[in-house]
Length: 163
Image 1: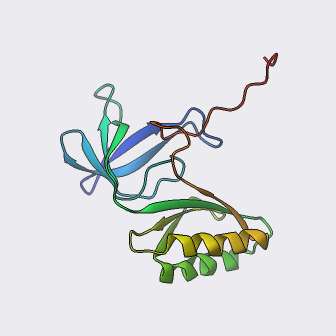
Image 2: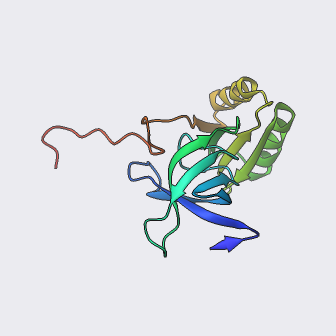
């Protein structure tokens, strides 16, 4: 699948709390290298414009991300607005983060991925999100690696004797 010179790359997320995998638009930059062209909504330790190595397991499958070749300096945060936060307040709140170097993409009316550009003020964005979380407006997560060498979440805890 290609669109304006972009292709889709995939990452498996068998331990993720919401999905089993994620596909992202990426620009081929030579060989098995791709530059991510959107903010990841579910994968950890991947960010907008990172250059990754991705290899297709077969010709009919999307290339699967293997590792990061070059970090872009962008950072990712993801947030859920609480149901009580009116729709009319959500986008203006997120738009107010633009002055701190943040932009956003929405998956739906409540779930958003934030991209903080390399020269943006990540700490100030986090402080603002912490403030909004303490007011019950939203909850958010950081997107650093959860498991070394993986883009997935940590496996769920298995209780002895469960099964």
